[in-house]
Amino acid sequence: MKKKQASRRLIVIGASVGGPATILSLIRELPESTPGIIIVQHLCKGFAAHMADYLDTYCAMKVKEARNGEMVLSGTVYLAGGDRHLKVVKRGGIYYLTYEDGARINGVRPAVDVLFSSAACAGADAMGIILTGFGKDGAQGLLDMRRAGAYTIVQKAESCASSSMPTEAKKTGGAQIELAPHKITACMVLFSEQP
Image (cartoon, rainbow, N blue to C red):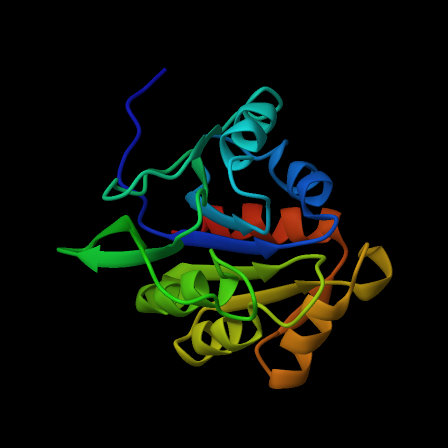
């Protein structure tokens, strides 16, 4: 296995109700050359490591719980853990992950909005995806990403266990396109292959 490189691009994903199965369907066929993927999935405290281990058994990419201060590597999926917000920071052209304490946003912590708003620092080198879920978490963050030049997608409502997160993101104007999960995977591959 060749050494992984710092990821030049980012894919950020937010999900809630129905998310784990949809996330698996999106990432299981992605090659190791895919840019770093960072996920906030609303989970009960303590379940992120278990979900990461489960996903890792099915994917070519390495799936792990995100650690504070680590560099975002290509071919790696990072799942937000704990009861703190996860953010992306860019230093010297390299993306790092950082946790921070803070109030719950949209009733949750970690919040999709916090991750997505921080990922706007990547501009056109980022893709933001809101999947199935209840509530409005991620809507503002996806809009922040779109305004910064990122490519933004929401899951098609008919394929969601709960469609309020994607619907809210569409209402705020953050979503460029609405797609079924298999088409989202195809977009992720195309995004990964851009020079």
